[in-house]
Amino acid sequence: MRRIAISVAASTLTLSLAGCGVLNATGDSASASPTKGNDVTVGLLLPEKANSRYDKFDYPIIKDKVDELTRKQGTVRYANADASAARQADQLQQMVDDKVDVILLDAVDSHAIADGVKKAKDAGIPVIAYDRLAEGPIDAYISFDNELVGEVQARSLMESLGSNVSTSDKIVMMNGSPTDPNAKQFKQGALSELNGKVTIAKSYDTTDWKPENAEANMTKAIAEIGKSNIAAVYAANDGMAGGVIKALKAAGVTSLPPITGQDAELDAVQRVVAGEQYMSVYKSYPEEAEAAAQMAVTKIQGKDIQFDALTQDKVDSPTTKAIPARLVQVTALTRSSIKDTVIEDGIYTTADICTAKYKAACAAIGLK
Image 1 (cartoon, helix red, strand yellow):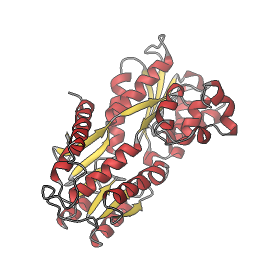
Image 2 (spheres, helix red, strand yellow):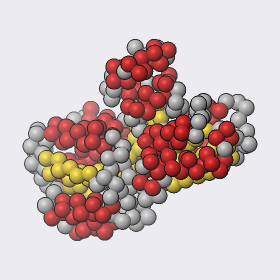
Image 3 (cartoon, one colour):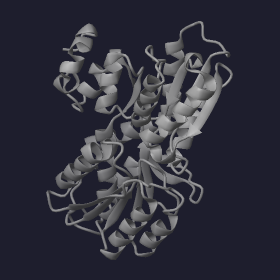
Image 4 (cartoon, helix red, strand yellow):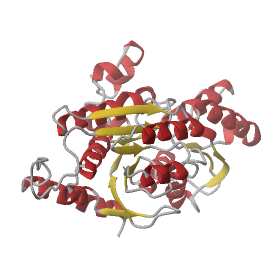
């Protein structure tokens, strides 16, 4: 059974328990057996700033949910590593020294951070891997179904090429950072849909996910393949899609090939509206971030039933097997699904997307 199917079952179970009043049990409940009251300190370590989602969505959503769950008695201590594994190691050590109660960790380098995770564990501080699966003695993991992300991107790319697609069509793959385990899963999922159907003419693992690195890689690909011979570009996220588009425009390409993305960043949604980027992958940050906050608070408060209900999936890392996990579903964002995704979930308003530059394009697709 695919992991995402298990995740749906987990969500159903969570709702069922909530209906029975279990998930909202207070710290005073005897069945909860809390080890800590509402005065919890949650350490939040996020990986980088190139992707705007972390400061704009993840941190404030987690902070608000911790406030709600602890009746505003809890604290979120936040640090962003700005793509530096060494800086994140120092930030993690500082949180261990400061004796936070629980750590939500989105690793810059999933392997390099393992020693820090062990130090936290030795200090009695649970570590929950957030969004990226870190190595070391992780207590739990929450993310999206990452192979499914790659599959959704690749299926959309194949659809964009139409029924006449053939193995002679050349695709450039702009994958994510080699230090991010999610990037490997995105690539694996994408290749499961692309292999045998098109030709992967060039494939790059892009250092630190940086758009400027993707732009440089794409410039090399154009020089080697020829700008008129690129049928489509698989870009693993929106920032890199932007870099790819810059490289193509700099090479004089006026009719852009289909380009994928991920994260539904505002710039990318506007590019989708304008027809410059074919699609992005919308991942419900509120669902992921709120569930992460719930996992952190219930873990440290000893609410085992609630914690187990939130982590019905299981995943393996290179160092730890059968980690309790929750995997959240994803959705393809194209011109036709903008209303049903980012607008419906309140991520952006129509006014945010349809600025003066994009007003005509918005009107053309009925986005008003």
